Image 1 (cartoon, rainbow, N blue to C red):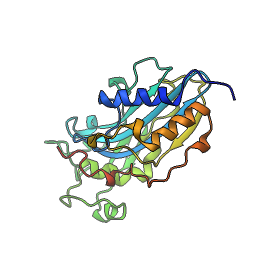
Image 2: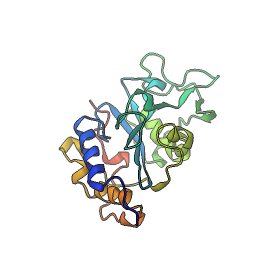
Image 3: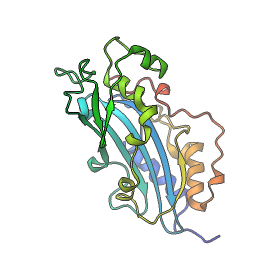
Image 4: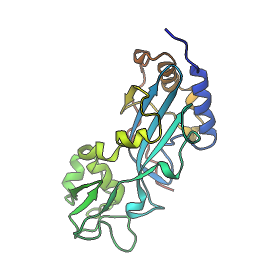
Length: 238
């Protein structure tokens, strides 16, 4: 096996540094309702990159401006510093020609008279039926009103890939020829609010080993995944 220009310790040091600077995903961020997440790792003998996508709703943005996929990007081959930045927020939704997707006054809930919106280039149907959300495992706070984060969580299973980054969007941030070695839609994520660091966490220790060696079999989790939004009830509640 060829030696790399970096070690697992180098990777974990960068992730911990970013966590100290609030540049690492905090799934119970009080300003963002978590909807979905994905982790992708890329490497060769000289370069490594780690991408964590966090799809969520920020009530401070409101309406479509609050719906984003925030890309947290780490590595030794980036055109910018590790972490996130304004350019790494993907805005994916817009009103359809039918009318305003969200209530006009506060832009925090669905407009009950509008039945469609744009998701990327696709016009999608907006569900208003309470039973739809129950079947998706989403308990509405104040039915029949559907808050934006409840709507997003309800439709995410059907439109997961549309909310996540495209290959083109990823390659605008990491080298086009850097091979992907690991992709996770479920993992056990550290609780940064409780001062857990990625470098002390078995999940990211294993991911760093995969990046150093190129062997995805070194990722052998023993803890149940916790990155589903239901495990982070304080997210968005400030």
